[in-house]
Structure formats: structure tokens, C-alpha cells
Image 1 (cartoon, rainbow, N blue to C red):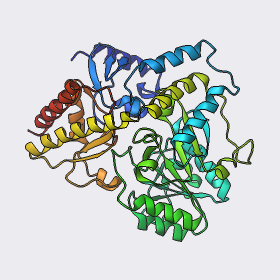
Image 2: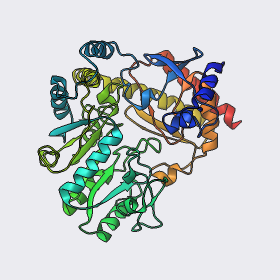
Image 3: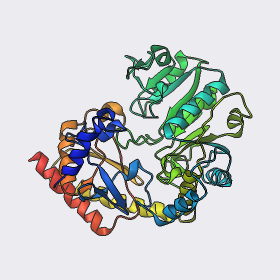
Image 4: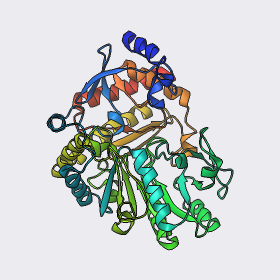
Length: 430
């Protein structure tokens, strides 16, 4: 496979962009080699600068549930652009998409548009702190909520110890207000709340983790968090930036029948454009400026072009709920084929799957939290990634990311993926 143009671009990019990329995971550091530069995408496929074609299994990290360049979204964007790229003033589409989100998402009574998932999570945390007049939050090891200071905290040495910054530039003062617990460990959360009685403003969690690979909540875990938050007056925040409108019409909270107090959204609500949102109970959302005292603003929030893309996406999903069965059926076929490959080769690897999200973990342990995820052979995954790439399949360039299925994968694409998976596994383990 010739990737000369991508290599040339990467060399050029490193002179003017830190690391040559505008987001770290794109650098391929976790899997070896240099990143591919993508020229275009259509349907189930991406094309790099050297015109190599790949079956896309990350779909812009989730939003392309209908495939790339979905015609209706492109048409909506082209029409919106005619009226200007931005106004810095309210538009009718903001109202329409807000009403649609409220209708589709079970726990959301009011919603505020922002520009990214990170911004949504930062805003939700500030709102929870302002509403409760408490300062501490609890997050879970392996869950990613963007690059806000409060979220870049590593676990302490024990269940009741404070976190430590895991990025330079995050102050120890911020870390003192962030408590961490293992995913799926309700008792650890209870230990934290007992040790910080009356001081915990919020618990934030990906109801299905997607940033340590796809990791599912154990039965009763989310229910236990809901009950604990009710008992302690803590704001429960579901980070549905990945899962919102992807796992179901109403996201993971519909799937698991758990209503959080606040929900953060992104990815799909932009239809591929940079958009985020946070929403929830009316009494909480009415604590946000200008009606309430918690300040949050954004000049480009509710951007008319992004709203046109997101509204078209949500309207389609709302009117065509069979999309969710289509993507799940596709994922089931792919996972079944992978499982058969793993078993026929006598390999001990673990595959986690829910809806249209799945991951293969290079470990013989059941992956239920970040510690078990870290037992994976990441070097072997790097070899697997490169082998799949050579076979025309573009995976997430990290062991600790989930894959996302679109509804435009054909039977031939599914067969290609399963065959490539089997061949790649055989190559790297023989």
C-alpha cells in the first residue's frame, strides 16, 4: 500500500502543528507508524491522500451513524451556508433542535447548545457545583469527558485518596476537588461519598464507556448510582457524547431506563460538525445564565450551519428508528465473525459489544473496568491495527477506543471485515 502523500503531509505538518496533528490519538503513537491523511469519505469508506480506500470503523468517532456524506445533511448544510455562516444571534433552528432533543432524550427538559463534548461536560460540572453549592466531583477511571482540567485526574492510591493531575498544566488545587473510582465499583463510590459527606456536587460517568474500549455497566451499577445520588443530593451526570442517539433514540439512558439529572451530548447532534449540548431537569437548567446565576456562554453556540446538520440528522433518526436495529444487526454479525475467528485460532481475547459499539481486547480477562482494560497487550494491538489497515480496514488507532458501526455497511463489507480480522489475528500470533 502506497502512503507517500500522507507521509509527506505528516512531515510538513510537524513543522507547524504540535506533533503534526490537532488531536493526540490521530498521531498513531499507540499503534506505531505515521497517521494517514484523509482526503474524502463517502458512505462506509474513507479515502486517503494516496487514494487508498478503507472500510471506516470509527465514523468520525461516532457521529456518522448514517455513513459519510449523507445526502440530506449535505443539502441542509449547503442551504444554510447561503444565509451566512454565523450570526451571533438566535435562530429558529436552535429552537427546533432543542425541542427535538427534549422529545427524544428521556431526562432532558431543557437544553443548552455549546460547541463540543468537552465544553458540554465542563459546563455541566460547573452547573452541578453552582446548584448544589458543593465543590467535589466523582469521576471514573478510564472514562473520558474531554480535556477540561477537572477531568484530567489520575486515581489516588486508595478509594478515599484525592486524585493527582495526569497532565502538566492541571493544578493540584483542581485535583483536590476530583475524586476517582473504578468503573462498575459501586462500593468504592459509596466509600468516597461517605468520606466526603455533603461535599460531592456531581457524579459524572459514561453510562457505556467508550474511551477504554467499549466497557458495559454491570447489572445494577447505574441503578445504584441513581439511588446513591438521590440519597445524598448529588447531581448524576451521564456523559452521552458518544452514546447519545447512537445506542437508541434516547441514548443509553433509554436503553438502561435510568434518568440522570444532567446529560451531556455531542457527536451525532452535529451530524459531523463540531457541536455539543448539555441538558436536564428544568430546575437545574434554569440555574444557568441569563435566567440563573451560573455563567456559561459561547459566541458560536447554536451556529446555524451546525444546527442545520444536527437537526437533519436527528429528524432522520427520529423518523426512522429502524436505523438502530440495522446498525445493531450489523455489529452482531461482525462480532460473531470475530468471535469465531478468535475461537478457531485458539486465542484468549475478549470482545465487548453493545448496540453499534464494540471492541476486541488483547487480554484473557473479562474487561469491566480500566484495570482489566490495562491488562491488554497494547503492542500486539498495534500490530493488529497495522495488519487491518493493510487489508483496507480503518480501526481506532488505540486499544482503548471503541469501534462504531454505520448503517451503510454492506454484506460484502461485513464479510471483508471478518476475513481481514481472521487473517490479521493469524498473522500477528503465528
